[in-house]
Length: 273
Length: 265
Image 1: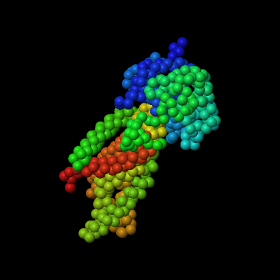
Image 2: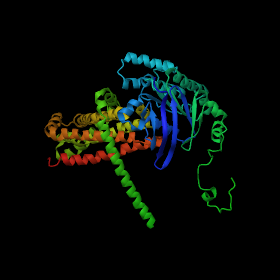
Image 3: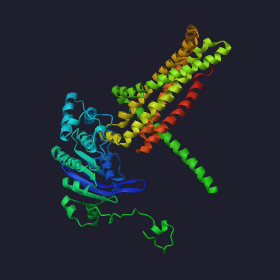
Image 4: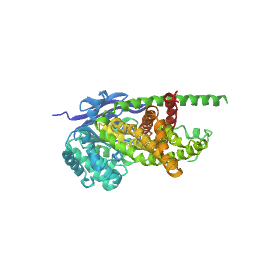
């Protein structure tokens, strides 16, 4: 039986130049779980996904995926590891020159030597799972935002990965599409027995479907827990985030010199806002 | 005043360093494209698809431009040559101008504007919409799958388009001078046949167009792949492709001509 933990992140640090994005992150993600990573814009959530997929290399620390340290792999080993991962981008990132069918078939044609008849059956099964078997002949430009994301979801499960990472899957969706995508994430995770990491700031929708939540703020894990623990939390950061309050531990103002300094005022004069 | 001079010098230095850095980046990228070209030859269908977009769809502009350039050459050549009673040499003038210079150069300039800009915009938009990153995350190398087939399709298309341009130009010259003006058809073709040398003229023209093909498509794919992933970034990269390609074509043409036609009478 494979070990229960699929991803282990130990003391992960990442900086762009001198700007530290992630500082000492530790996480553990089990098979069959849906995990949400929440935090304000620019808090390093997407960077974390890129470190897990090996697109970026950590400054220090490591990500271990299915027992292998991602950033220590050579190019071929990394590419074969990525076949076990899927990624759903914010707006789907479908290949615009390929039809819905060809988008879903893309990985099968690139990585397997399956006969075209079998690829057809598999693609239709994947599209059926996201409810879009009837849209197989459409081009990406003909799809709505929600449909494009469902096709992208079908594409990311094409080779039955062990992990799917979702980058802001709920952004810009109408309430119906939102529920559809949320339920699909939960159902596919359960049926395929994979692990899902959902990077989002849609608190209400994600709390309905996830097993565990990490909050990232200022590059560190500010809080973590099950959806119920998060809802009941009195920690100031979690409370501000879950209830969408304007000011709190996450300040309204971006760090800046004092207002007087910027306006070249005498320190005694205080501007009226 | 002194500060302004220093900052001026500093900005020149900065631009020079940036240009050299970018040239190094482009060279590395070019080597990567060559190294990862295996897929393009194993799955030649990928190149054929791009040949359609770069080559076949450029045919209209190449055929029409070639025809008109040949017609103008015919008219201007006839106008000058008839003053010396040598109007029968107009075929030679049209053919040599086209095969040696205008065919490869004008076809390459048109190719850069028509196909080069399209390649840059397509790759740049694929990057901006995260399609290239999605592909890399599916363990498919975007340089091998997207960039290399476009590069080789451009390299193959360019000499063929230049040849078609020259042929159309020669027919354009024939149309104006022989059919409209009445220059003797026999001398138009026979003088051309005796004056145009396969080795010096046709082969050199072909070699030039191969160089232009490599230069234009290498610039186009590099600019597209390295375009900032924004609307402004893609439009800037498309403009840079056309401007840089045009300058490189004209510069290369001078260098190649200097080597090829040195001492040829």
